[in-house]
Amino acid sequence: MTLEITVRGSAAVRHPAETAAVTMAAAVEGAEKAEVFADAVAVQEPLCSQLRELVELGAVTSWSSDQVRVFSHRPWDESGKRGAMVHVARVEVDAEFTDFERLSGFLDYWSGIDGVEITGLQWDVTQKNRRIYEAEVRKAAVDDAVLKAQIYANALRRGKVIAEQISDPGMLSGPPGDPGPRLMAKLASADMGGAPSLDLSPDEIIIHVEVDARFRAE
Image (cartoon, rainbow, N blue to C red; front, side):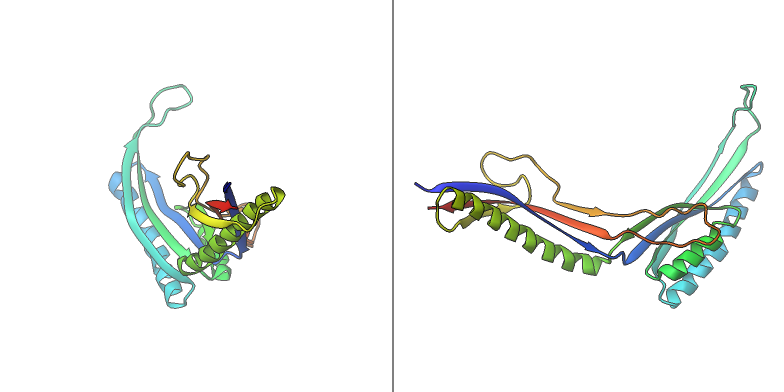
């Protein structure tokens, strides 16, 4: 009688961070709407100018500044009453760095400039290398599934397993198993406060893959 074996294989690799995506904003508030917008643009201009220079130096692969928000609100005062109208202007800036030493200096400088907000920092590997790493991990996940299936077959005194189906988690035909994550990447974040001179030490990027596989053994 043919034995059917269904298993889930998994594998993971760790790679040093290769890119850092920074999200920032030139953000200014005040009593005059036109004035706060002009001030935000005045902050954005040298910021973007430096990013252009960093692109030429090869430290930044790409950057953009394509989101603008201008809004007004009346904040509540301590007595619970509405205060005077406050106008806010925000111009968002995103950049991807590959030179982490220059990134540290860039953040160290701009974090001390009035009107600049640093809102996020995400580490990753390059898209080109991610495809290479994922291919390697998928093969390792398949190898893990084969090994698991063969261990089950050996325990039941069966022969060599033969693959019949393989898929991303939860996609095998027949009764579905518990769905699992197809791909997970750990993106470390940086602690950007407290130090007089910023020293970034990103965690490694973890690329994890799972596959479902069905085998038969005689």
